[in-house]
View 1 (cartoon, rainbow, N blue to C red):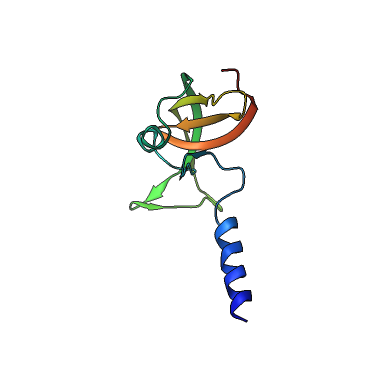
View 2: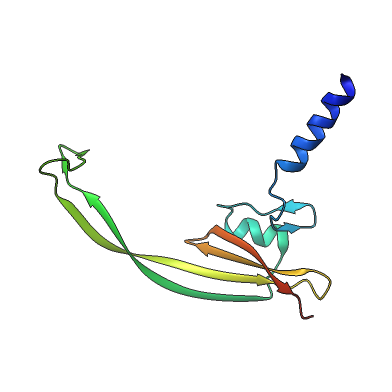
Length: 119
């Protein structure tokens, strides 16, 4: 029984972090990590591309500062907001996959593995 419990705990530990998560040495990069956290954990990326995306956001009118969901007579307001986007690539050489990170307003929103590195 004790061995089963230990094996179960080890499996939970192994699967508690996504298998394909970006790892820098013994650090794991997670969604919503800040650019500062990623720089501290992984160092400078191989490349950075940054741009601003304009997005449409809708909100509903409020009555007495309480948001109202417009079921019958609600009025919807549409505004545009700027989102600062940075796309980072880490190149660890030919023995590892390149790693892509997408930041929106300074927070990790996406990570994915690219092809083999070039260095």
